[in-house]
Length: 113
Image 1 (spheres, rainbow, N blue to C red):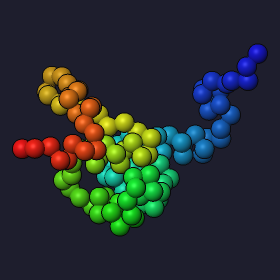
Image 2: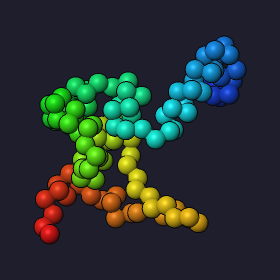
Image 3: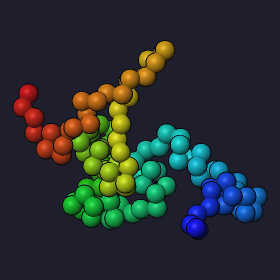
Image 4: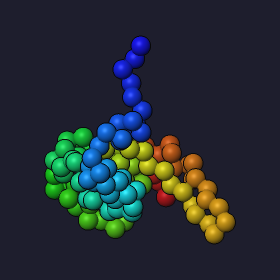
């Protein structure tokens, strides 16, 4: 017999205040965020991200302030937090995942023009 419990049964044991706090955090995490907000939502510091990326903290600070960056840089940042970057083109009547970005490595920045 396993000692597993469903998420619903665990949630039922939370106080109303704790359930509301969890719901607020879940909503915040699903809303659009900039990189710094996303990092903070995952309770990570710039130093932690820097160590995972093999760069210094100042580089992470600059990365978080950029409005334009390589897809491979963004992907590395997201993966450092345990996530996966997906690029989706949204049209009025449908959305299409763009698959050719899935194989871009960190060396893709050096692609010849």
